Structure formats: C-alpha cells, structure tokens
Amino acid sequence: MKNDLLKKRFRGSHLEVVIFSIISVAIFLCIWWAISTGGRIGRFFPNPAIVIERFFQSFVVPIGRNTMWGHIFFSLQRVVIGYLLAVAIGIPLGLIMACSRLGKAIFMPLFSIVRPIPGLAWIPLAILWFGVGENSKYFLICMTALVGITIQTFYGALYVDPVLLGAGRMLGANRVQLFVNVVIPSAFPQIFAGLQGSFANAWCAVIAAEMIRSDEGTGWIIFNGMNSTNTQQILVGMVAIGMVGYVIAELLKVLERKLCAWKIQGQ
Image (cartoon, rainbow, N blue to C red; front, side, top):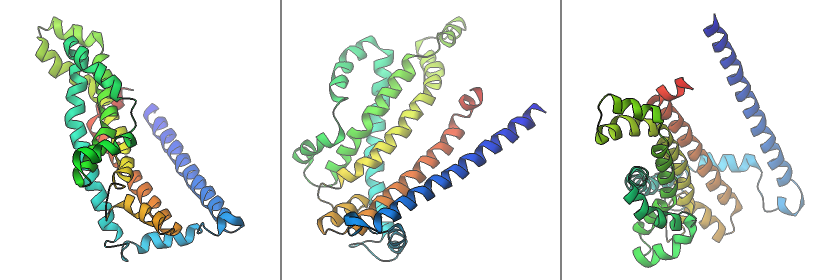
C-alpha cells in the first residue's frame, strides 16, 4: 500500500515537472519572439522560428565545410580527449591528497594555486606551449575539467564514513583493502558528481578551445558568425551547444542511476 502511494506521488511530481518545463520553454520562446519583433534589437535578432528552422536545416545544409553532424562530432571528439586526460590526472591526484599526508603536503599547495584560475586564462599558455593545433585545445579542455574532478574526488575520499572504516579494520582489512573496498566505493558517488559537472564545464570550454584556430566545431560556428556579423548563425551555434549539452547531461544522469543505484536507493 505504501509503495503504491509513493509510486503515485512520484508519477504526479514527475508530471508536474514536465508540465512546468514545457511552460517555461514556451514563456522563453514568447519573450524571444517579442524581443525580435520590435525595436532596435529586433533588427539584429531573428525570431525563434527562423533560428529553429535554420538549426534543423544545418544537419543537411553545411555551415562552412561541414553539416551540423560534423561540427558536433569534432567538438565532442575534442571534449572527450581533453576530458579523459583530466580524469586520468584528477582522480588519482584527488585520492592521493585525501589518503596521504605527504601527497597532500606536496600537491595541495600547487592545486590551491591552479584552482582559482579560469579556463580562459590558459589560452595564451596553451598557444605558446602547444601551438595552434589540436593539442592546445585538448590542454585547455583538460585544465577546465581538472579542478572539479580533483576537488570532488578529494572530498569524497576524505570524508568517508568512519563507521565503515572502523568496521573494515575490525574485520582485519589492511590499508590497501580499506582503500579498495571502503574508500573508493564510498567516494564514488561524489567522484561521479565531479565527473558530471566537469564534463559540462569541458563542453562549455570547447567554445574557447575552438577560438584557437579552428575550421570546424560548434564553437567555430559561433565565432564564424560573429566575424561575418551573422546573428542567425551565432544563435544556431548556441542552440546546438545547448541541445548537445542537455542530451549529455541526461545521459550522465541515466548512467549515474545505473552505477550508483545503491546510493540513490539509500537516500
């Protein structure tokens, strides 16, 4: 009986979320349309129907040398490579700082210096160190994602439930066994939260990365539109970035429910 009531309540709340989401999008489009139909701004601001139509056309009609499929592919490729580099560095670094006093003493001061630096600030160094090719883009995306991954891993591993650690010691687990069987599983939900947020940041950083000499990508669509004063193309690029980012976020939520089901059920 109780489970049935919970299911009905969940379905009701889910329906409310869907309805209010549709309403909010409709209000946003109405405001956009109102702005585009009058005044000085309206002369340089196409209405949403035109932008949405051009967005779907871009999957067939090329913008530059590629259709939208190609631009999204190039941007995702850059993001994934830079992001995986950040994962390979950030997770071990966060675990070392959380589980080793020596590791924390060595790396925390350096990380504390790097942490406040925004991703855009790395553009000049990226160009100087790696030139204007793909490596500079990977570096910029990596540095943008690295902070969130490292800090979430650090706090996730640092604040493991002491009861679990005590139970593991009572059962005779050594430090390695505690780390593998208690620390990492307990920290994983927070690590995954860091991975989610950092992927979103990495996807946003691809715009800045594609400022560094690029002929394709969703960021290139925006900057090419800016250089040619094509507001419609700028908005099409923005819609593409937003839609792809939304799809990625939803896929990561599904993955979280699969990988962290035990944590979600326990809340």
